Length: 274
Length: 266
Image (cartoon, rainbow over all chains, first blue to last red):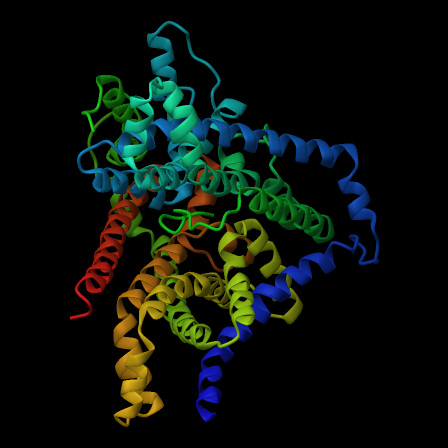
């Protein structure tokens, strides 16, 4: 009918957007990955990627992302668990989310001061007798700041899945003689694994790709895939190599999403994830 | 459910302390007359004065706000129409395909979006600057608006539209007097979210902004790379207040959206 025409009219600007800003950019990244600095069609970038330098970079980027995700879960799970037991849990949850809305740069910048040679972290270390340490520009500072920044995105989905849990299940488990640890291991954790997966998705991919934290906090100590892409595009101006790394980052992203994917709606719609 | 144990309370207190301490630390030192973030010499407002006396910074601030407002308005318009179109798609496969494409930019890392847009703009000859930044912000906000509007559209009963059509409403009337009023809370939520994403964005802008044009986050980045300047602290205090206002506004509209479902619209 004629109403069909009017309805697809709504979609015209939207389809143009999909073509220009979703499909074309990905196609262009793939296309550019086949060109070297002189503009010759080549597979050199891919050969380079599998050379020791870039493989080591990829591995270390994954290692750091793994550590960041691991510590995030370690801290976020108990937080989410106890938050669900508080009286005004939605209000407390909102208080967890608010810091995630503050600009990433400002939070990272704060740590330049906190971890600085004369900053409060070092004053604390001196007070407990450990003396002043170089904290900035170390692996530790990178992991700490990353965990700090990503933790709300881990707490939120875990909180949501814990909140949906039927308390009768815990009572049943206890009545049947399970210890609290057993109840956690066999009942609570398996039932909230989807929340953890959503959290991993929201933390692991940004941990691979963010370049702000590495640039400001870790100096050149830590290079993630994101840092390498930024470097190739904006410093070295080698768009071919940058695109090749980007292609692999997209592939890793798809794999991670498939591994952590689920049919059920996760809690990542709230708060910001990037 | 039992009360929280003491251990749990201490743990939560520590988590909240660590979450908020850096933010208040920043704001606290914005009043420091000494120029560092390590020793507080005395109270001053000079860093705030520096923000408001710096014409360059004020122009950048204005750029940021203009880009945010324009991009969220335009992306809301395109996103709302797109969401309506998606809901009316009869073909289920087609609809799922469009939705998957919609979500690509939401899950993509910023570096990828920034780098690929940089290639795109260079290829089609858009000069890097205001235009490229604005277009990028529109582009990454559209899927967010769609995601916020879609649930409201899906819960709207199609009988409403049929009734309006039976009563003689034109297609235009159905859109402006039936559909849009119904999904208004979703539209506002989408607009707010687009606004905050635009104000908050650093990485995408960093890639597509040329030499002459800058937004607040790009400027803060280059200032922060140079080291500690308490002007940034003063800026963070101001941004913190604006952000809080936006979050409260966003939750207010979200809450209203939820309430209107509960009470059935009226």
